[in-house]
Amino acid sequence: MRFAHYPSLAGKVVLVTGGASGIGAEIVAQFAQQEARVAFLDFDDAGGRRVAAETGALFLHCDLRDIAALREAIAHVARTLGAVQVLVNNAARDDRHGLETVEPDYWDERMATNLRHMFFCAQAVAPEMRKAGAGSIINMGSVSWMSGQGGMPAYTAAKSAVRGLTRGLARDLGVDGIRVNEVVPGWVFTERQEALWATPEAVERHMQKQCLKRKVMPPDIARMVLWLAADDSAMVTAQYFVVDGGGI
Image 1: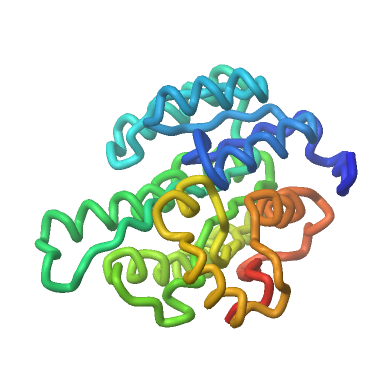
Image 2: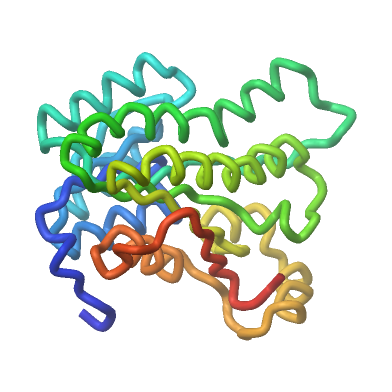
């Protein structure tokens, strides 16, 4: 393995949301390489089966907007692998939308897709983490709101709230030894980003702003997640870590 190996991750039960593609799939793969016991939730059945076959991780179909289904999926993980010790709240969708097009139902759906499930996942895993006196919850943020990006106000509103959720949970859960942190990716060149928005002109403009002149890729994000999950970061909580090549 070219990069760090974390002995403290071996055998840990790790749950990743949105693990069937993109950054989430890479996070699942990297935890599997660390010999963790990994489960992931997604509603992309084809992608989920592919990632499960490649990594050996447990895939559960779940629409994270359905909180009852989410709670049952997490309970299934606990029955199958053991109590969740590391939670990675990764799932999100950065669909573009204009100010004029947003109706209340769409706004609520964007909050459910990009924010609400993070809280309920943390709520579901917290009791067993409390019993163990330890745990790591890692929430995925976004530089989009930090850089003042337009064109998706419901998404940027939800992602900005991840900061408040992270710090509030860190305060509430820290007394029980549970750490809560945020990883803030920059523009990560997943297959979806390449297909939808990474035109040569857009990439060139982005690279002009970025200090490091190469694309940020999913493994760059996953390695920060691993560190925050491992005991190497045992006294790190309520913090955010931007991984964007120096773009903001």
